[in-house]
Structures are given as C-alpha cells and as structure tokens.
Length: 233
Length: 233
DNA sequence: CAGTGGTCTAGACCACCAG
DNA sequence: TGGTGGTCTAGACCACTGC
Image (cartoon, rainbow over all chains, first blue to last red; front, side, top):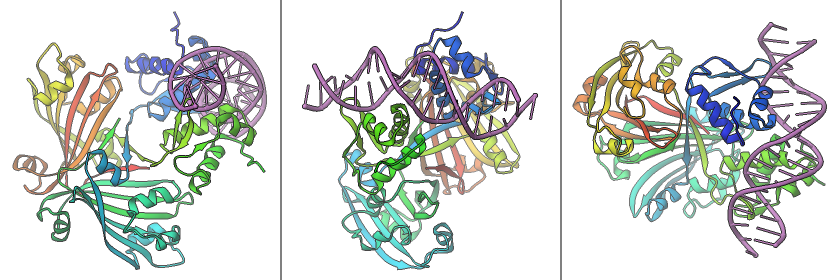
C-alpha cells in the first residue's frame, strides 16, 4: 500500500508525518530518493524538492553516499523580518520622521575596527539618529559605517534619508549577525528616548558584511519598553 | 556579450549583482525566465531555481503573468535558531539541569484560551520550570500546554524531561510566532532567577500551532540580563 | 486570452565519501 | 568504488492573472 502523493508539498507532508509519528525515528536513515520516487510514483526531482525543503528546515540531515537521516534534535528555525524602520512605523499606522543627532568621521572603537578589517583608513563614519513615530521617540540608532566599503556614504545627506533606509538600498546584500538583549536605560539614552533612567530598553545590535566578508556597518538600536521584535516559525 | 553562467548559484549571484549595481533598479520588471535561460545558456529550470531563491530572500517579487520585479524595499530576513535550552546551555560549555516548579491542570487565561481554540475542555496543563546552567539560574519558563492537541502531555513526567525538549520531539511541527521584549524583573521573577528586582530581563514569548492551526503550547521564557537572542542574516 | 511563473518528468552526469 | 544526493536538461502541462 503505497501512498499516492502528487506534488512535492504532499510528499513533504507525508515524510513529515512519518517522522512525527515515529515510523522514522530521530537518527534513522530513511529510504533513498530513488526508492521514495518509486513508492510515491513520481520523478526523483520531485522527491528531491520535498526532501531539500525538510533539510533546509533542519528536520532532515542529508549527506552524499551516507543518505538522509532524521535530525536528532530538530532545530526549530524562526524567520525574522528586519524591515526599514520607516516601514515598520508606517505599518503600525504611525507617521515616521527622523532626526540626525550626530555625524562625524572618527576612529571607531576596537570592536568596530576588527569588524571593518585592517582597512586602509583608520576612520569610519559615525551616525547617531533618532527615529520618531507621530513625533514621539521610537528608537535611538548608533551606527558606524565603513567608509572603505561604502565610500558613497560620505557624500550622502542622512538628514533627508535615514542611514537605515539608504544602506538597505545601496549596499550589496550579504551576511551579517544580530543580537537582541535587554538593558536598562542610562541617563543619556533615557533623555533621548523620552523615558526614565532605569526603564527597560530593548537593544538590537546588528552588523552586516559584504560579499567579500568585509564589514559594511554596525548599528545599535535601542527601543523603549513595550517594543518587541517579532518573528514567525 | 552574454554572461556565461553555469549553475544556479552563479545565476543567482549575477542577478543579485545587476540589482545591486542598479542595472535592474527597485520596482523594475526583469526579463522572463525563458529569456534569461537563453541569455545564460541554460535550462529554464536552472533559472527558476536561482530566481526562487532570490524571491525567498525577499529580493524579488514574483507573480504569474505579471513577471518578476525587483522588490522596492528589500526586506532583510534573518534566521533564528530556536534550540532546545539544554543544547543551548551545553553548547556554551555549561552543565544543564532543570527543576519543575509547578504542574497543574487549570483554566488558562483568556489569551491562552483564544489560542487553544474553543476546545472541548476548558482546562490546560500549566508547567513552570527553572532551567539552570552549572546550577545557576539560566531561564524561567512559564508554559501552557493544550491537552486537547497534546493529550500525552498529561502522562509525561516533566521532572525527567523538560517540557521544552519533550514538546519539540513529540509534537508535529507547524507554524508559530515569537516575540522578544525587555522587561523589569518583578520580585517573584527576581527571586527565582537569582537577580535583583528592577534588573532588566529578556522576555521571549512563543506559541506554536499544529498543522490544523490549533494551539499546541504557549510559553514565556525570562532570561536574566546578559542573555541575548542571536541570529544570522 | 495569452504570457508568466509553478511544477513535474525522465533521463543524465557528477561530486562526494562511507565501506 | 559504488551508491548517494546535487544538479542540470529539454520538454511539457497547468494555474493564475494582467491586459
């Protein structure tokens, strides 16, 4: 009694079902693509598509020659959208504005120098900005921009376009990392954010790299209490 | 002078390059798959694979008949791994233990009832636990489990296996959402977490749904200051 | 309606690597 | 070294939807 599956979605669902009900327990090797193609009565490419999706989701582990195994510890992956702050505010029905608080060319701290690499210049562009929703503080941005990888940034008027938005549209997409943590508002941050010192603040740290692995920018965003980073799984 | 691209990775990179250098600016329609297949000298399926990847990454927007456009606002997406807490601790070189603080079958609050649906039973399983790394508090977990969708949970000994780990391995994977925010530690949380009241706490709220869209569990995890949620882009 | 992307097929070659 | 997954091909049919 072979299951009749038509598309890769159905095959994916069927395989997921067999994993979930322990017919294919964690760590076990499941049949090869050619076998499954016969069982499901479809082409191997169709099976491949389904299996690749499950592998991308962390449910399967695939290796040439060794075959496909059910992951021992299915890592649940979540997706997080990192929108331009303007769109984030407008999506919530707010009116977005921003103010450039600081623009300077300086020698960045060691942490940022390490990220940007031992580049030719030892300075970088420092930009601080306040993002507002309906004229109320929404987030404080502290940013370093690598002027070696993004020289155009030196000629850009970040009073008009926020660095956040400009960089998203003008730098080559590549890798990066981010980090979300909780902090207490210091006196300076509290003043800018319009909250009290000692209030909780959500700190989002992020850096991006170009295709060559060189740093593009490093940014710290501080959101007043109440703000949350959301994602879907 | 057509670009010679061999595999889908190269085609993806070439298309990304044309978007980045504005030859294909945001909002513009790019050539159809058949055209690109001719230009790159490959099969349409190969182009399709490359374009699908870029669309998944949010860089392209594809519609039948309407063609493929460069996204106006390239939404940067990040990937976040949500590991079992035990593995998270052990990966950091710590020794993991956990303590069940509360196990009860109760009527959950309205928020949770709405998530679990107007199920047959109006009660659910409430589990509170403390996760420790090297015998020091690591995170406090407050969880509701839907006993309609996961009846086996009632017979499970969560002293031995953490609910976190058991659910990952015993419930069908499906959708869900999460939310990360900053809070102040209340007196009760501070006591359990071993920090001071008024310290910042990272709050991770998460709920998961089964394939039918019914709630499986809702959990709130509170981490002491210093902890961060990390992800890669 | 016609052109686009979405998917499937049957076959092929290759890279990799466990046995 | 043989079997596995990774990828590509040339062709086909279909679903959707803007014109």
